[in-house]
Image (cartoon, rainbow, N blue to C red; front, side, top):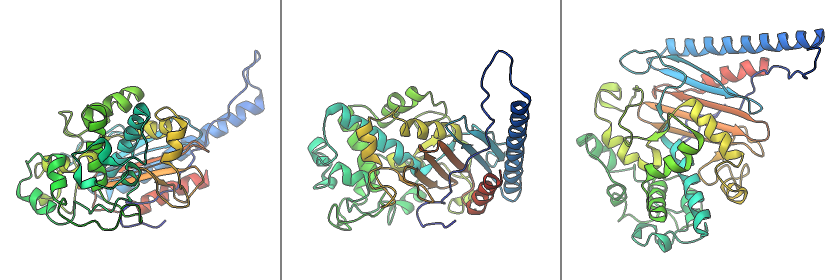
Length: 374
């Protein structure tokens, strides 16, 4: 398993051993069916125990914790957790709320596509046709924005980090963020090539608000959260509760509770301010791939070019690539996140960490080895 500079890690979607489905009949299951069911149940229990041991060992060697959701054939994912929920040392639960960084972008891309469908406007429309005040996006189409093909420079480079460190309690607006790069030249002409830039999704968040007349947080609630009954998914700091704490190599004091997080989360905005849980992310990906959030044509646009190009509109190819698998990864100080789903197999893999000082590569490999042995 190889790591890239942007995607926190790559993980192969894995299947947990499933119990044999028994055919209902008046006389009940026969001996062979009972033996098969017992064997499969025991195998699944063993896989679950092995995974829990792996998570416990991982957590024991570090300061934070880990939560995973692993499922196959669209059955309810197996959700496990180990470790602590922050500097206070509380036990991490499987439904814990993590900051998930750039997984936010998949949610934002879905909402923009929904809004386009409702207004019967196109991905190849210029952004400024629908949001004339977004002068920074002059000459850029909505498709180029969502696909990281706009040429907009990265706002997290340069002035942002010193500004956040100087005033960690500041509330940033999208306009504040975009002002950091408003006078910078494009990295390349729109459409020329792919280059990952968080600036694209700050612009996309503003565009969504212009299209709908609603805030980013209100769009999330009405379009995704309420529809799928996601109890742990929200834009921080929109809901006045704190997710779990995290440990970081980049924060003063080494953890998210050592300094205010306000400037970090508000400057991340539509590019990375989402909070969610392993069960919620598994539910979201499965619903997305099975037509519960987007029309078929819109979903086809979202995944167009996968797996050959490796990336599309808010999603990336599964790793290793499959014809239908989608994924995304995220990182924000104190947290690392990954989600993947393949609608052809129904396989789900979500992994969330609240310690960004450690690479999850070996843990992901170990979890996958339990599946291969099952």
